[in-house]
Image 1 (spheres, helix red, strand yellow):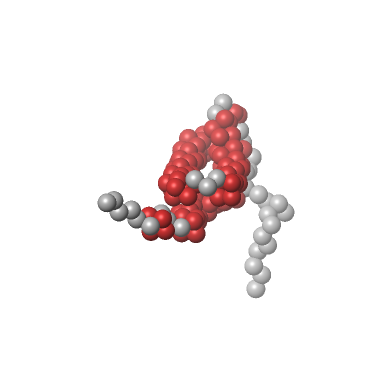
Image 2 (cartoon, helix red, strand yellow):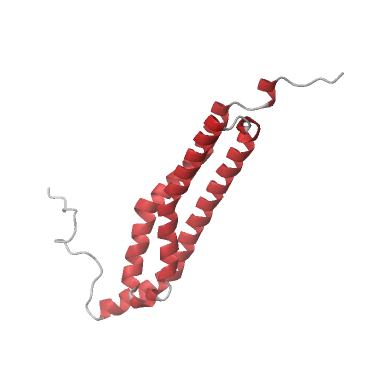
Length: 157
């Protein structure tokens, strides 16, 4: 006589699985948003200062920009896929937990890889930007915004 476990105790519920996805995916989403609004603009500013020295390796910055832009489409596509599986495939219950955990791991890994790529990119171009800024400063060209260009106003007592 064989004993089998009841269906509910052998598998994780959908709510629990998707809550795990949200908990582990939130930091990755935060880092992508941070990269989009903080890191990429700073990298573009450094790239602009480097000028022609950076032209040969502009593809590196392009990868970083493409990563942050396309990440939203990947997440949206996976969300749509999970919704379709939940509603249309009865066998999804058997694979849900493993597939969602694997996708969460892959997305987190890709974000870590993307952030590492951005850091390496910044480290590669910064020495060129510093040399270029020093040459420009010697020639009287400034890369610092003037008070008219600055959005901030000085504090007045």
